[in-house]
Amino acid sequence: MIRKKVDPCPNGVKGCEICRPYGNRVGYHERPMKVGDFYSDLIYGRADGKAPRLGHRWVVGVPSLEIFDLEAGLNPPPEARFSRHLEYQKDFVLEGREVKFLGETPKPGEGYRVRYRAYEEYSVHMQHVDLGGMKRGADQSELSRFLSYAQIEQGVIAMSAPANIPGYDLKQGDIFIPADGRMQMSQTLDLSTLPLKGRGIRSRHKLVHEVIEAYRLVKMDTEEEEVEIEFDFDKQLWKVPESLGREGKVVVLYNATPEYFVYLDMGEFRAAMGRQFPRLTILSRNPPL
Image (cartoon, rainbow, N blue to C red; front, top):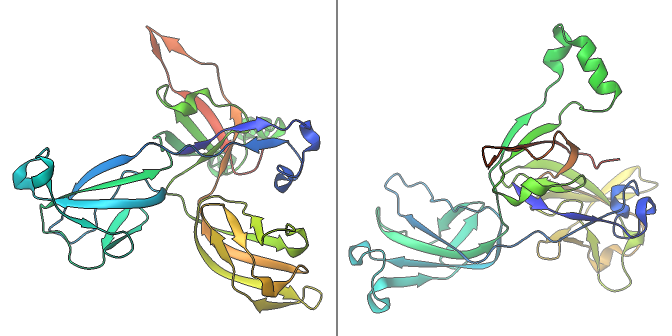
């Protein structure tokens, strides 16, 4: 999971230009996702032909890959350590967590090190809450009570955060992102809201895998006209070309990582015998009211 902290808007529930995309229900301002220091993953060529995997999913910036001879040991002197350096997007690319070589691949057992920066990730225990089974059982009264008081709802996630990760001190409104999650999303871009300078509209999701298609609504929104829309990953904006002008609406279909909001904190910080237990939290895909 990747965590994004939020701070209350100075305007309170009235909101402002920053928190307007969430419907002006709660004035939350997101902090930037935390980028870790340089990671150095040591991986090896595989005999089965499968691509090796990195420990982090969302790489920031340009990674570097260095191949070296294992016979010299894992800590040889600099002059004997690396046999060759590979250039990103020329000799290798990253597809998710996998390292794909475009030319000569490392031999089985040959070691190589990838240096990169990425968003910090943490391991948690997650369980999807499905209320369908409760409807068929003897807990109908309990289900009704939960739904009446808005304690849980269909499709939410129960997450246990260990005490040794930053997610342990979470608060309502904080956002958790499953690093390897992937769902099809859509967003309607109102071209009349384009800024005076630039052609970017903020994306509802920060981690976009790919754009499936984009089309413009024409003739009183009754017909569709296919257009080209790109996503700026660094600025997390939809790049609208000048040819579309500043009127009308564009619908973008894309695959992205879903975001879950802290919906309900299920308990106090617990400790026993000097040890802190995991903290149970309910996550929802909808922003808290």
